[in-house]
Image 1 (cartoon, rainbow, N blue to C red):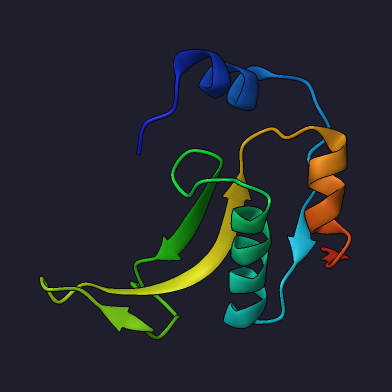
Image 2 (cartoon, rainbow, N blue to C red):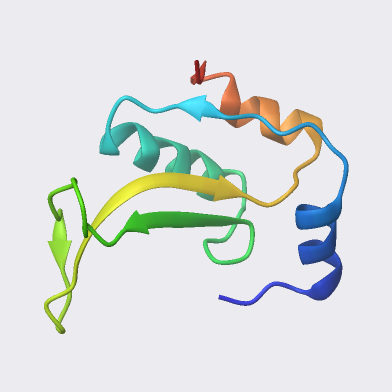
Length: 96
């Protein structure tokens, strides 16, 4: 996955509102992915699916050709305009 230097710098070093929402399960994460795609966003550019390698507590949902198990745990978005971020986040509860 590659993002341009300006976006990376804005994302990591920028000052902007960050929102963390709760998804109850894998299907809700995939719902956010679908919403993003319907808004014209691309995976690997505008959003990223984050998968845990299941080395501690989680059971793998999938196993790759090398026998490495992974479980989808969250979705991350690059910095977005407020109206776009609200379009997605309004469907989810803020994380407590």
